Length: 86
Image: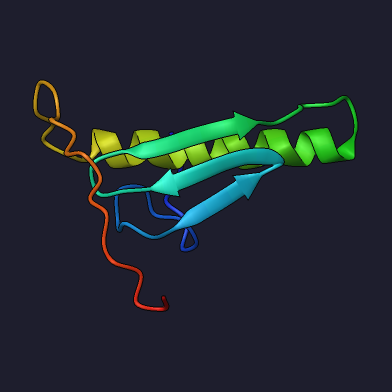
């Protein structure tokens, strides 16, 4: 089981983003989304990426195990807001 880190707390907010190689991990309050890819090469960078992924998934599992989970979550579609800078 992983321990929750102070840097990326799964399901804690709608804003945190973590990158492992070219893998992007996006935090949401109802899901954690992984997109892209990461190469776990047989070298030090590969080991670093594998450890980061292992820690992330451990944190996700620990967070889920500590909750009273519904049978299935209903994902709400993303909403588009007006860009305040345009």
